[in-house]
Structures are given as C-alpha cells and as structure tokens.
Length: 97
Figure 1 (spheres, helix red, strand yellow):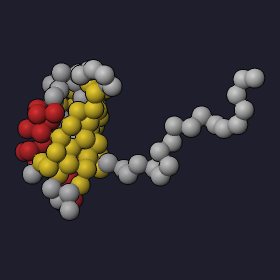
Figure 2 (spheres, rainbow, N blue to C red):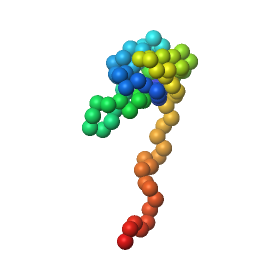
Figure 3 (cartoon, rainbow, N blue to C red):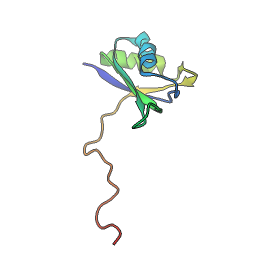
C-alpha cells in the first residue's frame, strides 16, 4: 500500500519532476507534486510525494529529511490525513447587519 509524504521548504524553482527524481533514490515513487498557487504556476513551497510502500516512505524520511534540494534543506515527514469536515469556516451566525 502506498504512503504519502509531506515535503516542506521547497525552493520555488523545484519542479514535480525534480522532486520525483530526488525521492527515487529512496525507493519507488508513485507520484510527486509541487503545490502551486491557484491560477498560476508559482510554487507554494511545499509538495507531496507518494512512495510505493510504507517502508520506502519511512526510508525516504530517514534519508532525505534535512537534505538539500535546489539549495534548500527539505522537511520530509509522513503526511497526516486531512481532518474530517474540510474546515474553512470562520465561525457561524450573523454577519454585519
């Protein structure tokens, strides 16, 4: 079963392809994506990599966390599932009247 990793502190020049290549040294990469600003190709400075097994994901964290890619030391950790409900609410009730 594949395991997703969160990758933070990406350089704005890092691409999904270069992220995939970098993580391939730790095992089989199922997918790699740099998150971009909506409506543009500008990186938000983080992304996700999916490794083929939980063991390879753990290996990637151990080998690559703190290592440099494109001049930046990466923060690599096992991705936490999104909280149920999606969030986004700023409170409820009345607004300006």
